[in-house]
Length: 145
Ligand code: 4NP
Image (cartoon, rainbow, N blue to C red):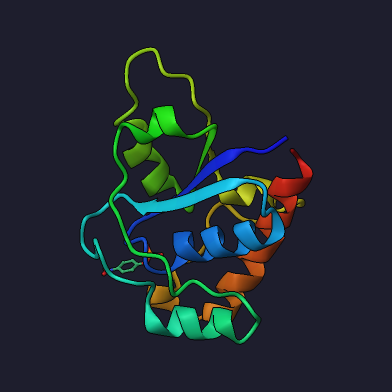
């Protein structure tokens, strides 16, 4: 079954575009998008060091541009996946009345319940560790389909 999945982080230049690019490469029949809860980087491509780390493992995301999460997204996707609890709360605060679209943490799909968030490499500078976790969670998400 194909699915419509939206990944959401804060800036939409590191974690969610990476999740977007990894998931579309693993599940090409799914509709995948990403967004940020902030408007800080709207229109920008993913962060250069994030792109470079992804490119080194064969994952392209240079076509992506940041956009802000919008309440309409609740009606456009089957599942919304947040990178951390802060962003999940920001998403939930915009839920339209009567909408029942699930919003989950990406780490819910890590297979072991090891973490509660995807650490932000914009601050940690651990772009490879971020991609490792994203690849694990993306595979878990696809397997639960
Ligand atoms: P992201 O990381 O939420 O994974 O895209 C960030 C990128 C930029 C900023 C914060 C987080 N910033 O403060 O500009």
